[in-house]
Length: 127
Image 1 (tube, rainbow, N blue to C red):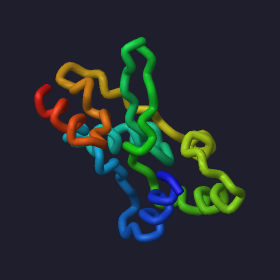
Image 2 (cartoon, rainbow, N blue to C red):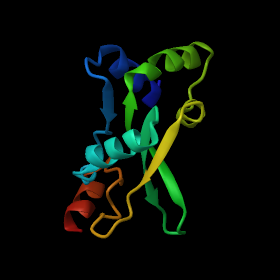
Image 3 (spheres, rainbow, N blue to C red):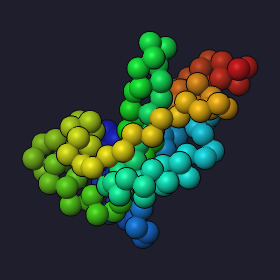
């Protein structure tokens, strides 16, 4: 069912006002991810703060599964999925979302790279 099913399950079981999501196949995600997303969420009074990474072409690309969301978004996600919605970008477009760029000095450009094979993991380890 994709990432939205994970979001739904997490939000239904979340015992705090905020839920942080990070995929399990990204070993180099920024260690200050939570802090930066939280600062942006509060500063913009948003429903969700989402990481953004710059591509080789210079375009900022959203990384929607790296996000911090308020548990209050659960109702909108339930409604979205009950209407047949499955695309994460279509759901997050309905929310007050802030995109947080991860392009400061010291940010690893491979931070959001997925390692789905042993070869990809070894490549990341070798730098």
